[in-house]
Image (cartoon, rainbow, N blue to C red; front, side, top):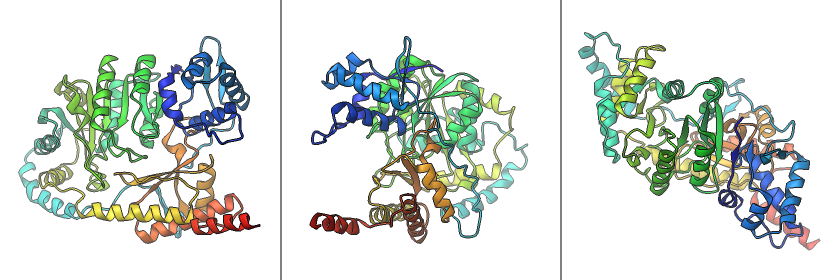
Length: 487
């Protein structure tokens, strides 16, 4: 596996305020702890070479002895490995890569609350769209019904939607797919092969990781910093690992909910162009803004029209049952994908395409469901604050889920215990590679408020049993601390 190199500026951004000046621990132990957490959280990937001791000492303003002591501690714990000619390379100790539970999507047992799906029931306009599609269907029955590119009426509607979002697009830049997942599979087959590398932001959509692994393609994770994206780290990964493409979720990222600002979008396209790395931008969440609308597409910043390939889908905004997605790229790429598609399936169902075209032409969006999702998001945040106050959760500006950070690296164990108590959750390692994100859970806020309350109560019970303590609210914790002080 190729080793990538993390440069000091990127590492400093990831470390943030790592040193507690009032701590009794020496600096080398604090630094080792901070680096260990970055590896466990997946923000520093595995097989990544850290800056040299002298280089890092200068960047942090510490002595080389302090850096060497921190690195020695991490080597002893199994989080660093010294390789001849490669410096200090990150890894996990043996046994620290637990396999996360597999979500089969089936609620086993009548009382199991399946809290793994970040999706909504059908939007109110879906039934009307199907009725309109049935009315329009007779005009298409004289054709064969096979069009690998998709119905012209839908391709025009998708192109018009990009135009409304500020990105000029023509129908010959669009191919319709059976959902975004088929679109990604087509792109993966076209762009990469076994043994090739693909850069991903880390964490990322779990089905994309599984698709890469099934194709024997090597994911190169670039950790997300506390806020935004680290474009310097992306640049380094592009130059050092020569990936066949990069897969990035720019809008209301799954699972973190963050959204890439316009300046970062421009910078990402610029560094990708310098290394000739195609960008596959996943926009399946682009319409899921709750506090603000997503900026114009990343493709807007691609003057050549050949650097950025964009995937979209009707599943999150309208209904998963529509199974209709699309790819936007230059016309030559679209034609190549259409030829490749005929080796797997011939076309998407006509009725679903007509229904999605109607929804796009009607400008159907989140509508009143945005207010409902904001209420459920805020309700879930309040429940966690009440029942699990030691967890750290930030309110995402969009998307469908929270990315909850636990105090300890125990997400898989907590998920297993929670399932025994009647709630199935997705632990962080599902969204990373090599066992990363053991301190995280993804918690969708798509369930009803009653179901969310049930889910949090069962999670709190699982958390209490895991640590052999009763769940406490923030108020009860404060009272306990006051009692301890008085004693």
